[in-house]
Image (tube, rainbow, N blue to C red; front, side, top):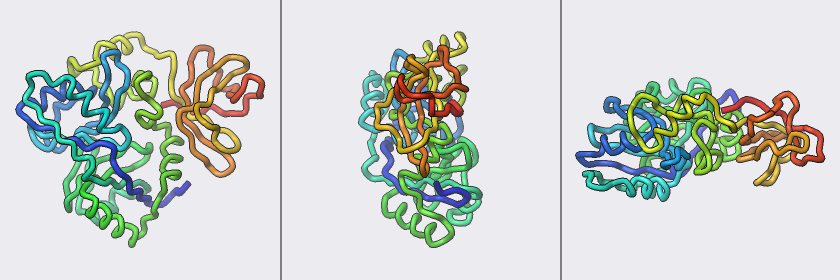
Length: 305
């Protein structure tokens, strides 16, 4: 894994949908899990749930104007988000325009990357904010627990910006390096690690992606009950072991008991790191896990989401 360097990774975002219309704000506010009652220039991370409170997709919502928004997601497909929203447009003055095919993205991370962005683009966004500069939009990312940013824009502009950064002291990181950093930080990718069979709290997203005070939205009643109950029965954890990552789906055991399953994984030299959904019932974190009820517990359980 590349560490201690400013890293850059070019990718194709899975979603960019522009939402406009007189009812754009009120409609999105009633669908999104986080509070969108924020000023222009806000970039709010949250989820799109179904009526059972299960995770359909995630995105950042960028507020361009009072009733103009960009929904941006690196991993949740527009083919999932768009129908999820269209199903609830009844008499609302709301227009969805899918711009996904026209955009590219840059993921930036590493010590001092915010200051470096200022030198190249003139400004870096603060927490939960985005800025527009040189034809791109920049907002804080969620690929690690350290400082990181997402930049989205037209393909030609993104490629030119990538080349400018590589000509300086940035290092290009491939998919494997980015996945290793994300998984090691315990950051779930949606829907790979957390999807339609899972609750947000099981991925540790209750603090960053859920508002408990904004009022009604689809899945809100389930979120309120979960908060009152206090705990979930499953949760994503980082798991580490020797050798190559096991082929998914890979079940995990503690003794003879099934303890969970690996959702995503990455190599780290002679070891691997994975995100696993583990049952919290009778889980002994000190004992470790195995890939078979007949094997000794050689996998270590790390931090949870």
